[in-house]
Each structure stands twice: as C-alpha cells, then as structure tokens.
Image 1: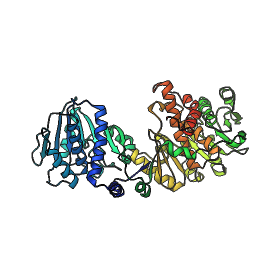
Image 2 (image 1 turned 45 degrees about the vertical axis):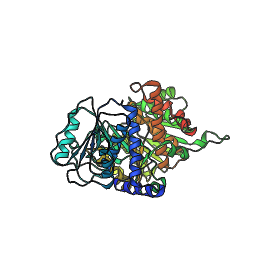
Image 3 (image 1 turned 135 degrees about the vertical axis):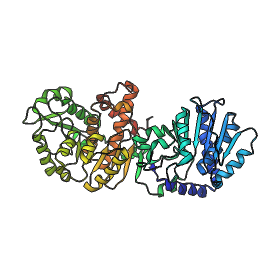
Length: 508
C-alpha cells in the first residue's frame, strides 16, 4: 500500500470524481457515510457527541457526519463550525446548508467570540477542524481549543488526521498544540506521520476507511513510502519443487555467540532452519560447541580457535549468505576479524547486533561494508553508528541518507520496522506486536532474513520478506502465548507457519 504525500491527496480525490463521474460533494458524502458507520458500531445513540468542524473540506466531512448521525437517532449531537474569517470551502458551505436545514440539531457557527461547551470524560469529540492539508501549526484560539479538548478527558475521534499534526514531518511542531486523538479515521491510505513513535499519543489507534478512491491514479502517482501487506509479500515467495535437496535452499554461515551469549547463536540458527534455509553452520567461540550442538542439533558447528570469543571470521566454504553479529561481543580481536571479513566477503551479507557495535567502535569500517549488505539495527545501535537522534522521524531521514551514501539496506527495527533501500524507498512493516519486544527477537530476525538470502532472494527482497515473516510469526506466537508470554524461541518456531499462512492466503 502506497503512502502519499499530503499535497497529492486532492489530486487523488479529483481523479476519483472524474473517473466515477461524481462531484466532490458525493465523494464527501461517501466519506461521511464510512465515518458514520464506524462510529455507530462503537457508540450508542444516547452518546453525547460534540463535533468540531473547521472551514475546509475536513470540516465538511465533519458536518456531513453530524447530519448522518442525527438522522440515525443520535439526538445528542452538538456541532460547532469555526468560520472565523467568514470563508468556507465550497463543499463545507454546502454541507453547512444541509445541516442548518434540519430541525432540532444543535448547531453553532463560530465567527467571533466562542463560549466553549463543557466536555467531560464521558463525551465523544469529533475532530474535523483541520486535515492533512494544513500548512502551518495551529495558532491563537485554535491552540486554546486543542488544549481544551485534550484536557477534557473526552474520547476524541479525528477525521483524516489529528488537527495540528502534519501528514509528513513534524520535528518543529509542539505536540501540546495539537489535538490528541484516541482514534484516527483516515481514508484509503495512511499518512507518513502515523509511523513515527513520537506521534503515537497524538494519533491513538488508527484505522483506514475504504471510500473507493481511484486505484489507477494511486498507481500512477509517485511515492517513496510503502506499507507492506501480505498481498505484497505473497508474489515474492518462491514455490518449492518436488525434486529438491537441502542444498537447493542454500547454506548460511552464522557468525554468532561468545561466552555468556551463546543463546543468540542458538536462536538465530533455529530461525534459519524454521524459515527454510537448507543448511546452517554456526561459527562461534570454541566453548559454545556443546550448547549449540545440544540446542540445535540440525546445525553444524565450526569452532573458533578462541575459547570465549570469536577472533577469526575467515570463510572456509561456499555459503549463499553470511550473517554476523548476534552475541559476538566487541572484543578488539573480534573487531579485527570483522574488518578482515568486510574486506574479503563476496557472499550476501547481513550485519546485526554486536557486528554493528563493533563498527561503531571503529567507524572507518562503515566504508568497507560491501554494497547491498543488510544492516538490522535497533534504535540504540543505529544511534551508535550514525550519531544521536531525538526522534524516529530524524532517525528515518538519516537512515535514508546513509542507505544511499553507503549503498546498503537498513532495516530500522521498531513497531513499524522500516526497510530502507539505497534508492531511498522505505517499506514499513505491518506485522508484529509489542510482545515481540523481548530478548533475542532481533537475533531471530537475523536468522530469518539470512535464510531468505541463502534461498536466492535478492537482498532487498530478503529483507522485506524476512521482516514480514518475523512479525507474522510473532503474531502467531501472540495467539498462543499472549502478549506478555512471548519468547524469541516462540517467534522462531512459528516462522514456518507464518510462511505457510502467507502462501495459502490463510487468515493473517
């Protein structure tokens, strides 16, 4: 699913009206119908609902919604239309005329002084003040209105986007001056700002409403941001032929583990095998032999000459993917070995965890990373590599720049894990849950991605598919273990089921 810049939304709306031979008011009515259906599934007709409408088309949506709710028996609807400069959009004005023609509805058009209504925790506020077309932060009385709503404790539903929040970048906007929604109802496609952690409390839960916008136009318009869904992943998965053997599905060299952190090697190796990798060889500290061979007997073990840490990353055999980092530590000898590997490795490569921490301690290694290598940092590892950042928005911008500069793929882990390609395109993942924030989850992801690399997937596809499968495996583990009970091994063990679910178009 494409994520469009806010300035392209009117173009999509216009194309929809032209293709379907409807006018903009009919499209507004369609949007309001979708909104009213969603709200009626959540609240009884006895609910007090206060509608705050602005002068633009977002306000028009809100006015049409208020009329429809009133027509459906919601008699405690109160409407405030803010028309302080005495200029409404054409469609908003048309919806205003329809509303004031109704008998009995509580309607106030605010042009000068405003006597705010009482709002309490049992009320619902519909925020239709400003949508994604907003070009500057809220000011003056609108800031006071936003703070009044936020302080009221009422349940807030924002149409399109919370008023005051921009659709894309919000680094220089004060969040206290925005309306904070409990639920955001947007149309057809999400806004980029929905995917940044710092905006979560502004947006609340968000849901997309299908209003049959023109698919042809949406395919034509440019977009560097995508939300990855099952329908995007399914065509990428390669079917398996009947007459195959393990070597057809690739060999992974997993350089992982050290004394006290052998579990990282175990979880990564298990994830490789659960995700379809044909063979996995774990190269680790010599002392980890018994642990790995006992916990993952299907894996081969290649001992380092050191007992407690890895000092040699020489590749002795042919492997279709090399994964480095889980639990290797940051010993100077390990950093030296990694430097030698980066200079000589020709196989597809994934760097995670302590491999990234090693590079952070010796920054000149960044320039040695082979093209199209996959890096999988969490936010701490990312900041150690590329400098401290104060928001996920800042971090994503830097990831885009660094992916282009070093010609690498960055998998920036988080609730909406972002896979950033060297082209600058960004793919947000739609699977996964908070229960996956557990020790070893990232080690499992390394194994999953390396399994797809070994099976011959291009690095950009291996990262995309691996992240989606990993998140879906976490969702399957959630159903079985509950959000508080998920362990990384549960995620690894559900990878095969996740892949089957995607292929068979099962419920996911």
